[in-house]
Image 1: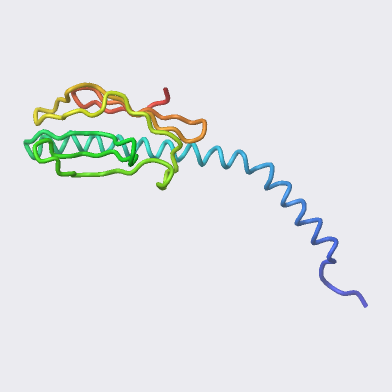
Image 2: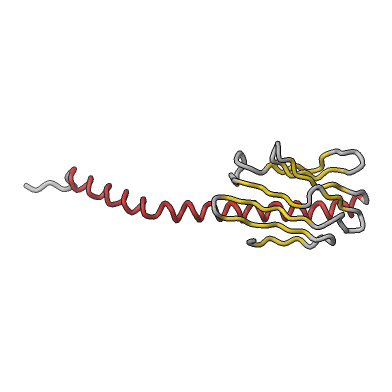
Length: 146
């Protein structure tokens, strides 16, 4: 009489083969996850900057965009009262798990006329992937690879 099923040796062989296939695929999956995190973070930061330009015009008050390296936070605040309107944490403790954030030209003031005190860039790095968010004085915001 013959029994139906698999032997322990057959099951071990299948598990070892699946483990080897997973080990080959892991580096590529990890690289894609890092790239995706950098892209998502750059998109969110670009949207926050566009919101800052919009808020300045809608509230008819200047707003300040700044980045704190100690708290790793991008902040949009009312220039007159320094009240924080929006705060975006960036860095290793966030959902993007960024390795580095490098702002250039911050802090800036955005006036109700739709112009900023100067252009600026923010480089967001996750692993080997870097995405740059740049904004001109007139509010043109772009995300690209430096």
